[in-house]
Length: 365
Image 1 (tube, rainbow, N blue to C red):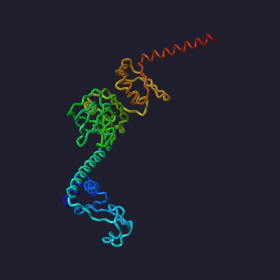
Image 2: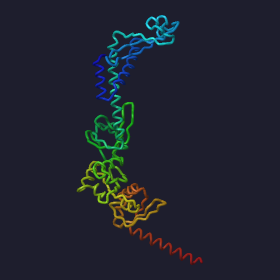
Image 3: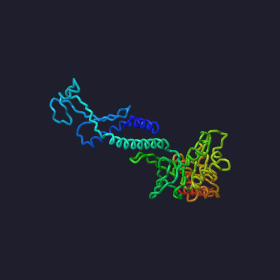
């Protein structure tokens, strides 16, 4: 090794962010292992690389003793005093024992260490980068499929899209560009593992944050998001500025903003509803696009009875109960939906029951 090597380490420090001192210490450790392996030495040894010149030296380390029992580890006080006057029993004596052909072994060991350290450093940087992006969207390209797992090329690394995080109505073909949501970043022996999702509600939330400037600026706030991925979603929004329509901002001119998101989610239907601090109003809004006549709530049970026009009943419930189910998840309330006719029938039945009960009491008396 020489100055050229030292300068190369300094260049690596600048480009990769790996301390040259850390590299030199790792190389010294590797050389120690290589020395013991190649020269079968049972003695204690120390490897030293001169930080300024790159020169490598090997020193044997022996303990000064009155009587030598193990020549590989001990040296007599008399012999030690020849080169180290004033040496005391128990002190360590170092003697240079650098082999002639050690340079070739050193170069090979140093190369392996540097490559390994660079690889580890890059893995560390990737891990830190993507760990800080948990809960964010990343763009990637579908590269391969192993079983039901989809691997997405993010540029410097890959992300894993597990079957549970895939939308069942979507197909992922090689070369497809795709947006995913980072749900977790793990450290593994093979480097960072980045787990992403297409089904997470956070994906929809971040898409709106990226597409709608008013959300990014904090004027419009997303209060809640629920999804049945690939089918339908509901998002509750609120405007902190009375002059800004929260729904209009999310829809965008001629529906351009929401349509861009729908297109990214391959046609997933999105209901944008206005959040309201008044629970009755919020529940009524959550059933959009259906109209609501009235909402009665039971705070103890956290349930609501909603009345809708007769012709809006099927719309409010949705296909296989989807609209009502999403509204309940969005608001956090149990929702029972009835048409006006059903409510009238219930009231008439309740009135009849009350009258019958009263008549029976009179007979008994």
